[in-house]
Structures are given as structure tokens and as C-alpha cells.
Length: 404
Image (cartoon, rainbow, N blue to C red; front, side, top):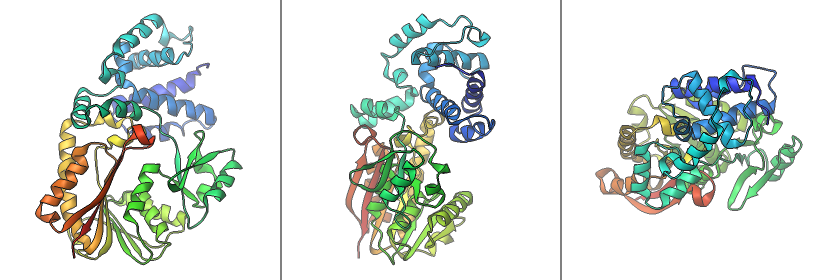
């Protein structure tokens, strides 16, 4: 591979914003990739994949390069030289940014530092200790799985198309896919590609949604004619899935504390041909009170650390801290206590997170069932999806039933 100066500089610019200005990686790249219209798909792929790779392995690369945050531009180039060397990419000799790069020393330090798990897997000390405490021996394999690049998974919208129709349509764009056993609406891309520019996407035939995430709506098991509340809907991936399973019949009440996310959901719903979703901004306790004991199903896709989706959001591990974990667990408990009131007697509550930590998952559910707020609920079943065994995102989901 031959390095191109403009692409490398764009990558360094992106890393400066992510590492030093604490900007979100996906938003930074979205802006970066729009800067030069002359860039083709390979150019954009290089910038995006290289940036994500360096974010994912930040600690390992900085330790090898012997640099510390905040990173000067020169130090970002030192880390980039580490990336090149470990990838077997020749470093241009005529670039002043790479003068006297110690290639042999880089390989030697990699071999030495890789003996330490928290450096090898590139993760903060406190998070490594927490993972080992909560998951024990499983932590090693989960960490390794979370550092692999995530596959692109699509969820076909059954209101508009079949799996076969989507496959054929994408094939015309030279995008090949495969089905996944046990996931009736899922397709996996055989190679990464920009599916958002395809006619099939523009016509609302599919959404991008990981296979593990698709299991949540299946556990909710919504039926046509029901009133289903998605209490932490965000931009609505699961709301759209639920509405499609209801065949546009009944009502999906999609709630969130962020109005901009609900606006995005409305836009997506129009593209999907879905008209049984009603969005409600949670701007006061009255919004919840109006729905007390009125929902046939309530989904609480709770805020969480997001440890199960680090493959997609590797920058998240550098933004988290121990205080955040404690705050998010308190928020989860508050949401469970408040939002569970919307469940009708005899109806279902589904609690879900994209975390793999028991303290956010099964322990949170057990604590809820012991509190006054959960005394009228019984545990039905749960499912833990680990990246190491599934190959997809880490997720947890529990089904509870309210007593009559």
C-alpha cells in the first residue's frame, strides 16, 4: 500500500479532534469525509478505517510510541508510524513527519508490551479491573472480541420488501449479502460498503441494525392492535422494528428525553412507510403519568455503558470513567422504577442494554424485583449475548410480567 499525503493528513486531523478535543469519532468522520469531493470510496474507506483502528488501539500505539496525551501533531504522526509498521506498510522516506522512525524498536516494544492484557487489548486500567471483577475468566475473550471490527448487519423491513428482494437489489450494486440462521430479517454484508446510497435504502427496504439488537423486538413480541411503549427510543431503531412486526396496526409510543432523536425517528418512519408510531418527548413526569397501566408492552432499552458495542464505538472506552458507571446504574434503577408503571396488569416489560456487565443487567433486574416498584412483577426469562460467542454486539434482555 502506498500512502497518500492528503488521506494521511485527514486521518491525523480526525485523530486530533477525537483524542484532544474529545469529539465523537462518528461525527468527526462524517464531517471529514465531506471535505474533498475528489475522494473515491477507497479513499474514504482508508480514512475511516485507519482512524477507527487507531482509536481502537490508542493505548497500545501510544505506549509503543512513548507519547502521552494531549497529543501534539508530531506525536500523532509517531503513533501513525506505529500503525504503519505493525500493518506492514512502508513509511515514505521523503516525508519529514516520519524522519528516523525506529521500525525495529517498534516491533520489539510491541512484542514486549503485548504481554500485558490491558495494553495488548488497549483499555484503561480501571475498566480492565472492572471487567475482570464482573466477568472473571470470560473477560479475556470478550475483550479480544470487542476489539474486532464489527460486521455490517441489515434488518429488512417486511412492510416493504423480502430478504430475497433486498439481496437482489443490493447485488445489482455489487453488494453481496448472506442470511443469518435464527434471524428472520437480517442480512450480513460480505464486504463493507456504503449501503446508504442504494435505492433499496432510500425506498425504506432496510435499516442498518446489528443482529443482537434485532433480538430485542422479538422478545417484546408485539402483536397487531397492541399499544407498545418504547420508553427510551432514541432515534428509533427498535421502534421501527416493533412497528413493522405489528404490520402498522395498533400504536407504538416512542419516548425519549431528546427531541432531536425523536425528529430523526419521524424521518426514518416516513422512509420505512410506518405510520403507527407516535413520538412523545419526556419533558416532565406528566408524560409518564398519562400512560400508567395503559401499555400492553413496555420496552426499556436503557441507557448504559455501551460496553457491548465497543467494536462500533471504540472511542467510548476512552470517554468512560468509574463515576460514569455508578451514575448510569443509578439512572437505570430510576428508569425501571418510573417507566415500569406504564405496564398493564398481566402485560410485559422488557429491560435491555447493550452492555455485558452483570451489574447493569441481571443484577439490575434482581434489585428491581426486590424493590416496591418491582414487587408486582415476576421474572420470565432473560438472554445474555456475548460478542465472543455470537460474533455480534454484546446485549442483555430480560422479560418480566406484571401480575394481575
